[in-house]
Image (cartoon, rainbow, N blue to C red):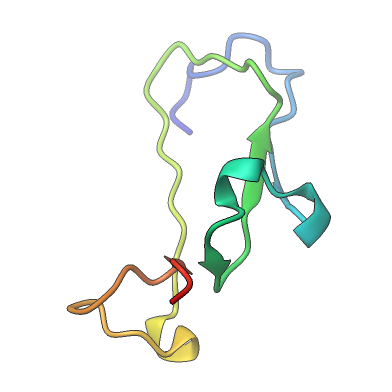
Length: 76
């Protein structure tokens, strides 16, 4: 996060892994092959652009990026 992105420095930004029973309904049709994270706190705004980066080990997931998106797959 760049300096000055958060005006209130007491705001605690977090990323929390969601359990299977916490997933949003719109993901129900997908076979997830990774972890879904909640970013918060909800409603946070920033005074400068921020970037969220997540690394995905495609070898561990057993996917070929030329053929499919690595973190989810629609069931057959």
